Image (cartoon, rainbow, N blue to C red; front, top):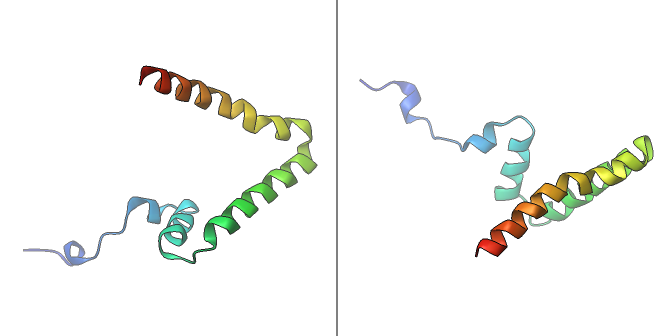
Length: 79
């Protein structure tokens, strides 16, 4: 015998995450201008972080991105 839960529509896992779920749902089903608003919000948060913590907040994205760039160069060189 089937339970009532087996007939419920399945939502993607990303939609059930607290903050990222709302962003993923809006990105997939929302307004066409949402990517622009998301980028503006992230740049604004980065600006607030720079205003609050100074140079460490300015340099931190580059420090985080350097291992990602190394992995990308390795992936490109392997073909």
